[in-house]
Length: 135
Length: 420
Image (cartoon, rainbow over all chains, first blue to last red; front, side):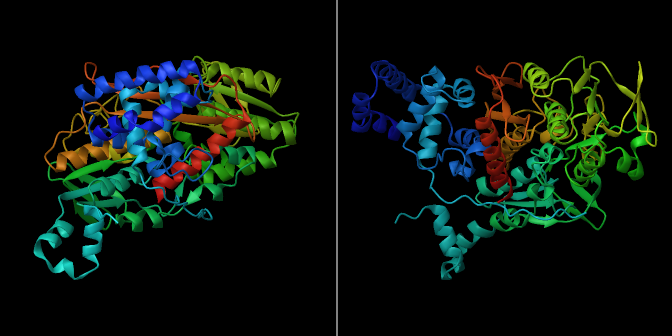
């Protein structure tokens, strides 16, 4: 979580504030506050997040390395992923299905998932070759 | 370049470093043997993640007599005519070799759960923990006439993707314009809640384009459409108007295979192409192991570990589990990972995750290109000791081509994750 605190406090986020609309600014500001509170009080185990993150693989590939058609999450900047998830959550970014997942996760889980995916190596996803069905 | 412990071990294994006793111990000493029975979505995922999350310290042996994995998800598109079954058929080579999973191509005949031994036709395997991912079995005692291979040639279920899917497609291709397709849906719970209604939509899509005078009669043993009801109802009324005759509370009690006629409690219905999906229970291996303790159909598990509530060291994952969770492929993989994570912890004498969370997304195609979702996050409720749906779950507002594209991406990504 230290790493995440550092990231949240870093210049990138402040730079991003200047580029976003006012309501997002307020929203992210609230989020940073709540995250700092959280970071001191709650620990989410790495195996818990690893397992939850793997649940995203059905659409986003192993460790977030999508084969295509959905976003690659591996190596994605954590603050960017948090912002997208929170935007799905509050409806400021429209989606077909992601708002359902974003609303179902806690803010703490979203933060931890974002850190997890940012730490994954970006690699080419493997595609199993299809075969002729044996009759 | 930073080298982490795992890379170091990999490098060590390929160099003279392996001769150092401490390192070779770290590489070779197994923390235990996990036997996985069944290489479907659940079992294949469990095997892979057990190897991966234990950093190779658990021996994983898969017992699976079949040499091919055929995806049930997307198989209704074979009936609609937009997918070929070969596009949904895969081998296990990448899964085996990429993760060091030992593979036994044999059939399980008995399981001694007190001595922890799996007995197969050609040998035995001892285990520390056993994962059974048996999928579903059909309750033919309710429709004994459909038990034989000959009967299923005439009246396929096509509810396990493969040759029966191809057979049903061929029957639809041979049906005359103006023919009647009859599908029987069993009472829930069964594999893939929206699946039968997706199938109706796919057959309707095919018939509308190729045999527009044909009809579909849906005999649903349930009181209403049990998944995505509003969406399917609207799609059938708007896209396939006049084609689909939906009859709720219609349990099939008998089948005349030769005359292609089904009897419900109320009526006899004759078909040109007949698709009876029989009632279901946990797969045969769960029955053999004696873990199907709920109505003698489904398996009660601890949702932190997926260990059977009645037999220790035996874990159940996927469609066989008794739960208020949809019996879907995504759900099967999510359960498999929670189970794998818990076993990795237990085999190191640690406590499993006390509050697992996972997601489920299921797409249904209503035409060649358009799909719609049902999606939920589920989290463990420590008071109820079950997985409960979190806030925000639900279904699409309407089917769309965009979601059709996402459904294809879902399939490609889940195949990549499960099979490589």
